[in-house]
Image (cartoon, rainbow over all chains, first blue to last red):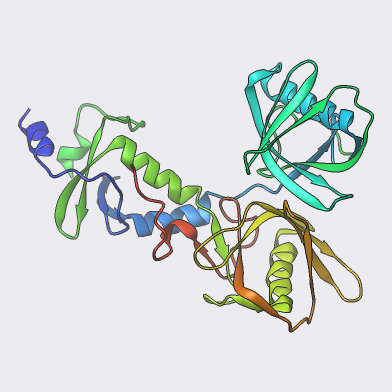
Length: 154
Length: 161
């Protein structure tokens, strides 16, 4: 109890500082600052995944209609969550290769449409079976989406 | 040493309401587990800023091509989600592609359109730029000059608040 009381009387901070040192023990005492830990993380962790392109139920390729955007999103969310619904979301990008613009946002799907809320807070719906032409890449910017490991490359 | 090793309870999980005592310039400071975890996560998953060399920013369109090409060559891909960074602000998340031709160029797409940056183009950029990963190093790019954004002067991602 005495040890606990001493800790509780130590001044508290609400942020980390790079000079903060933590005492560790692994056979010997070790002192690690966040700078030391950061060097370790940079070498052994924190490696970004490369982006993954999806079309329909495959890796790679492009889609050619708004309905195919819906189908791709529906398949991705189903693969990741086992179903669709407003609470089942993914972060994706849509590169319109005709307009040559890309927008990223959070998307969910229902049985009838996919709704994406872009980073600029605008929204766009993609309806099932919509045959309106749209040539686009569906991008997962943070890499392969969970549940799509077995999807084949186009 | 023996006092720590002989503690009867050991944990491999830091809880939000745990307290960790750190040495901050010889002063003991108490941090909650939540603050500590947020800070460490911010380091691990921090964006990485890529420089031409050292801390050098691209000042011409051709130099931005060079930096992009370094990242593409090292990572072995020809397209990436990426941001630009002007030293203060990051862009929105972009899409960058390498196009081989005469001249070689990169194309950077945004929500407003696209820009091409050609190899050898000495046209000055409106503002000096470097490139920023969404989080962490891209694979095999550790030899390119880079810095963890959370550790850059004046840009602190370490706040636990």
